[in-house]
Length: 103
Image (cartoon, rainbow, N blue to C red):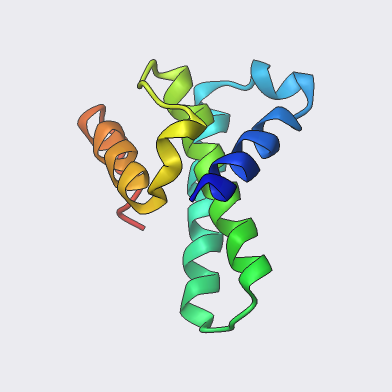
């Protein structure tokens, strides 16, 4: 899964400078919106690997940015197993009152 970690790292590095000044509310909205898009894509059952990857990268990038703003330890390197790290971050957010997986 090193390729996924590399893609996620690059996606985060490509963010515009103003992305670092977003409020927690804006970052939470990014997480929720990207999760809705990921789930909607998955429920359609289409088989475009590139599109599926783009949705996963979008959601994981949003999770990382929001978790960093709340001081939840994470970084792209932890996404060697994406589903495990997503679940860990979603649990950490739920413990802080942000149940992002209740969509």
